[in-house]
Image 1: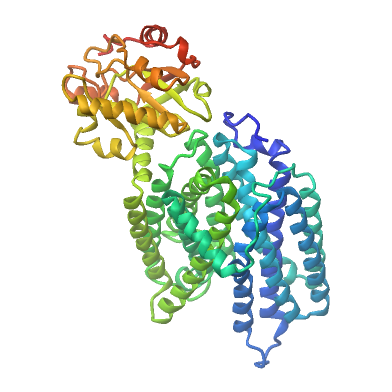
Image 2 (image 1 turned 60 degrees about the vertical axis):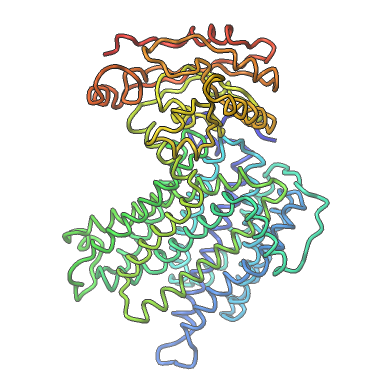
Length: 636
């Protein structure tokens, strides 16, 4: 089902492949059509249903009712939808969902011709049901057709496409309904878009059911609680789901409040509102696409704290960037950008979106990678329920705070501070996120790392990695380069280093000692290595048994042979070059000189082809590594 190609740098290469392009077009057109219909209906209610001087109809009630009815199906039907998607073949399921969209949009087109607002509101509820079923299909489809190295790229494209579809669809819905014969234009557009979505879905490749024997529980309440209980069994997945839902809380707050913030705080008119919403959406899209480059084609959890930091910092700055006085007359775009401080506001809005993209894409990819495949659609369904709940909570919080006299700028300040609190809480529960952030910073700022031969590391299954040992951060650099999680075996004194112990412990490092110093720790380490390999994981050892004191490659010890005798697995030789003389090596130069000489130094990780266990021993592995390791004795 999955194909190669995930190592290529261009994220858009997926858009040339049948396993992804028809799916991408289908989901894009669905989000696009949803927002054309929804925004056209809201403007239709606000400007066409009620004539001037007519107070018989509560416009605010109808608008809020429409918004609520679109979200309600995610609470009512997501649990059922997740089961249905897991049970059935996905391409056929998506075609059925798109046929449902055609029927709903055909009815909506007729209702627009008649001007029947209540029928349109009921059909918006039906579109919410259709979207609740499509969500689990969308995100569970991706890992069935993309390998782990492509998950970030796939999710980046889907996230970017979704937010662009929301923006363009919202604007188009408003433009069409506001034009002459607007109802007719909207009617034609939503039917055409739904038909195009169905046609593209016919080219989605076969995606087999992951659990065809599943018996569907039709009780949404009990199934929702069961989904949440299942998610909580995997702590990282559950907290990642909460993190995704929190992002929708933030996104809903900004998207809903930006129009009034622009009018009441910035003094801008509709042109400024449109531009700010466009910047916010383009920021999310740009951040999503940048994720694939910054993560080097793997799921880089270090980008999640990076995104959190940006969301908080630029959210705070948006509060402080507000003008001291609001103009009495609303400004157009040209007049607004000529005002002092306007560029700062525009930059803050764009960067909030950009760092939101850094935050959301790795979380979605992590959920897809670490969830049990047979339950992924139901986990996505549970995520949709929590998303909807957090979006409603966002609206309730805004109503309460704004009603109590809090300004919209102050609401943004509160949300930014809440984001910091939520981030600290999540990262304290799962320190792996923060650890990966430190590693990501290390290999993207202090060093410039070049990778060669990463494809030689098996994409799945157990393997033993062996590497020369040049510095205290060898394990962190290797972990930051390899796409799969790796457990390292490390001398207990380095493991207990005051500054690095937290990172090593979080990464699951296995401390080891010599047989004459801590024999019990030695046996415990070999036992843990065997268990880890038996589980099909990667283990990395430094066969020299100690950190190099002179930059040379020293004799490999026979511990590797003991490991392979107990657990025969493929062995992957590796070499690190460029770290001798850096701040974290044992070079005799002063720490100041090592730091100054080592900053932005070129580091190279070379991964050689794997050896079968019967051909791997300490001597042969040392010979393999010697061929590619550079002894930089005179670097300084």
